Image (cartoon, rainbow, N blue to C red):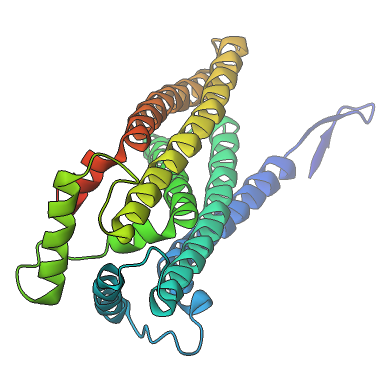
Length: 296
């Protein structure tokens, strides 16, 4: 209903804010439902999307058993190239990580949209009771943390796409003490202890493992440093916006400042990860030895 001066000039629209609030509420609810859906899809959908007839991976346990058997066969083959059976498992794992990476990107996009809606709704909500303020702050904090976590999931799965073999063998039970796998792991550890670097191994399979492990960490170094540049840009934008925001607009300054601090810390973490992985990529053998000793 529109209120008027005597001359017919509108003063305010009492229905407008209510409709705007309801529309924001519906959008937030829809985005929350999407975030929940894609969170579940991230866990359950990749195996269904990437499985092909004949793969024989009914569940995660069967995949682990298959990887164990094929890794032992590969190590004992005396050749550098993957056997067809191991190549099939590596190809499956690559497709699996592609599916996870795509879903994680979609989830991250939804979470960023949800966070933006919550920010806008909180800033423009008008006077709020303490309970509603706490609800907004809690929801915003949760969405921010989930968005950061989703970013890490994107990075990890892109890394898995680039170096699927190293990602796949991380499923091996390194503490195995009996059977063919235990014997194979013992041989790997022994040769790694004697190794001076890629190209000097008696077993060609170990040479491939060292090279792929270097690629695995080089990929994360590049991914982390690219992400750090993006995160730094976001940090700068957030603090610039906070600086330009009027001091009377406490809600906007609070949200911008809080997210700015988290973005800055996330940037520092990414830089540390990038540097650490660069060092490992340059000299992968000690880290691979620690990995087979169960230290990574």
